[in-house]
Each structure stands twice: as structure tokens, then as C-alpha cells.
Length: 203
Image (tube, rainbow, N blue to C red; front, side, top):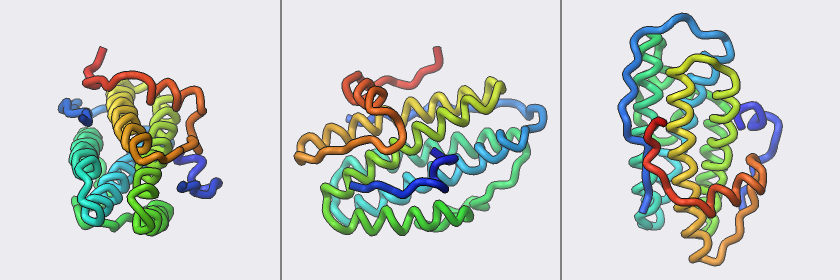
């Protein structure tokens, strides 16, 4: 979704994270696309964490806290791979909520948290939207590299996002909320929400 994020409007209407450690050795240089994807993913995963933390603080519903903890693992996994390439962290290690160096993500955080403020139902839609965006972005990142360590990272993150999407979909169903995907196809969305969680172990 990274490529679409700049062009499209934002249509807002038990949880398993990816917990394996990724410890690649220092690799060869990255292409411009690989570098851009990796740096963007670092901040995009923090966006998910920060919005879910905001939603938990507002509503006290455990799904937001549980998934935000998983997103912390995701951001750390991205940082590990960045460090293996000796890349500077765009966040400079900051964990301050709602602070990003990418202006698009900074604006998106404000948009999404304003939607969270409306109701628990809207906050649940925000969760689905974030995972919808993340899955497409990760698919595009996978398609833009042939480096095994990057593909492994993005596949694990995508697996985690699919688990999160299922969890938010279950909550949406309980609340009587309907969500139509804005980024992945309806066929893929249906496949994800109608399948079981996985542990995100590599094949």
C-alpha cells in the first residue's frame, strides 16, 4: 500500500504475532527500492503500534493492547534487519507515540486517531484498515526484492498482519461492523478472515 498511500484517500469506515528473531549477518548493499521499503516498513509498523496503543488507552479493550504488543515485536524485527545493513534508524530509537519522520505517516496517524475517537466501532475499522494497508505494502516489498533475509522479514510481518486482521474481523463481527477492504482484494480479504491463525514459522 505504500505506493498507493500517496495517491488514495483513506477509507475508514486470541492474537498471534510473529515472534521469531531475525539475525542476518551484514549483507550486500540495498537497491533504492529495497532501502525505501525497509525504512518505510520500520515507521509503518510503528504507526500500527501507536494507533492501537491510542485505541486501547481510549476504550480499554484488550485486543488493541495485545496487537500493539505484537507490533512492538514487528518494529524490532525490522530494526534488526536494518542494523544488519548498518542503516541509521529514521526514528533514532524513539518510542514516543505519534511521532514519525515520514510526513505521510504523520498525517495518517492524525487521521486514524481522529477516527478512533468517534467510537469503538470506528476504532475496529481502523484496525482492519491498517492491516489491509500493511498486507499490500508487504506484498509489494516482497515483489521488489530477491534478498532472502528481506523476503523472510516481510513474509513474517505479513503473516502477523493476517492474524491481526482475523482478530479485528472477529471483533467487528461481534460489534455488527462491516468492513470492505480498500487495498487488498475482496477475495484475499475473505480468504484471510475465513482461515485460521498461524504461528508464522518459516517453511
